[in-house]
Amino acid sequence: MTGLGRRSLLKTATAAAGGLALGGTLSTTTLAAPAREAAAGSSTLNVRWIGGGVVEVATPDNKQVAYVDAWVWNNAAYSVLKVDRPSEFASAAAFASYVVAKSPDAVLVLLTHDHGDHMGDYFELLKALSGTGLNVKTTGQSDLMRGGLAQKFKDNGLDPAQVVVNGGAGQNFGGMAQQGAMRAWLVPAVHSNLLGFPSAGFILDIGGARVYASGDTDLYGDLRLVGDRYHPDLALVCAGGGPYTMGPRDAAMACALTGVSQAVPIHYGHNAQVLGAEAGAEFKLALSEISPATTAQVLNLAESRTITV
Image 1: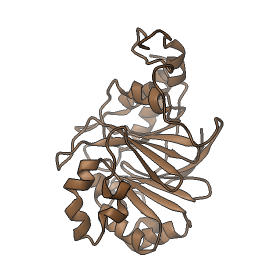
Image 2: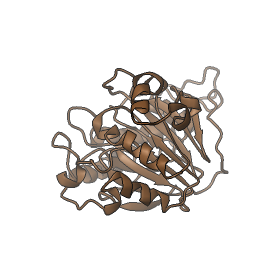
Image 3: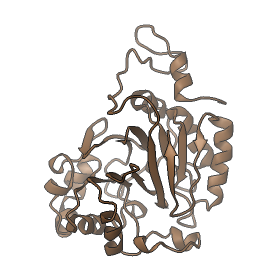
């Protein structure tokens, strides 16, 4: 598996009718990827690990800001990893002030699924951000948005038709959502959901780069198709292992299959059932063996890093 990545996979794809190589890679002549907003070339994003599976992604000017999941002031990673919680992550009001200070044109909250370590502060976060007048919307799997969570939006004083993309409908697999200059496609995750609706990951198109946000998932072979279809540059990939998701080596394999050039390991150090800080080092080592063309970006808790893809 050494050296496996999207670009090398594409080189081995056959141009024959049907487009299937022996390795199972689809030819680019038979699979049209959604067009990018920006021309090919390097793009820069600011990425901040809030803790567990929760991440902030923003353009360098902070005009476009996205949050992958919403567990902030109740996020247990700070006590587990014994790191002081930044003041901006201490309460809903403090978080709202922090986001307002960025002066974003648009904010998008991506909800992968309804487990507490991903949506623990979701409704309060949306209410706090909306109350400031920010242009904020959220998205997730359409049945979860329209069915499972519809009454909870209303119970929290939120109108789904206003705060959920596509007039309250969210999006389904392969479907697209747009907020400001950001676009997002829903992709599968092999996981569960308390309300019984599908868990998901996202491809986020922001600032000329594409981010694969895995959510909680196991490794699965169609991640190769995700790579061939959407051409992500950066992965935010769960790597904590334990009873519920893949660990560092499988996360590295996911990076190989999607062909990303940069990868941030997440979803560790937030409870006793997952790996602690060692997950980052284990992921970096596994990536060097399995996908050496991918650079590991191991963030400290609450660290913000500029990443160029």
